[in-house]
Image (tube, rainbow, N blue to C red; front, side, top):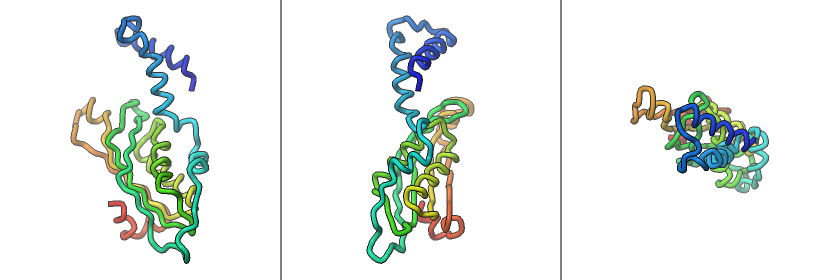
Amino acid sequence: MDRKAVEYHIKGLLKAIGEDPDREGLRETPRRVAGMFEEVFEGISYTNHEIAEMFGKTFEACEGGMQSAVVMKDITVFSYCEHHMALMYDMAVNVAYIPNGRVIGLSKIARICDMASKRLQLQERLGRDIAEIISEATGSEDVGVKIIGSHSCMTARGIRNTSAKTETRTYSGLFKTRKDLQELLD
């Protein structure tokens, strides 16, 4: 990320909206925003494949293989909508996969969700990205992802419907056809 360019453009944006970027409360704002962007958009620097490699250390599943799914629920993330650069917040991600002889550490599932969310995103694409990364990291085609979240482009502007939530589901492998596996995400 080009911090100096971000600082320059934030200063210009402040001027464009009628603010004085040299007033006391705003003097450091361009620098602070550039630092925040570096943090909240970290995922832009990595492909899904690179994230899978970063968090893809696996362990042998239970002796004799594993016949059940690994399910992690209520992983909290936030992201920014690519249409308005508005915050997508109160997002809860549920992830399930059927191990193919190997499992990843539980914290890695949450880290994958977090890193994938640190991009300008659509909630639908975020679910697909998480499923793709989990699939590559675990070696399993059988992955399900459910995301429920609020979008400030709906709650703080436009229609201003503060109670609206968006739910998306992404299925691959057995999750596409098996209702019992889909229900694990509820």
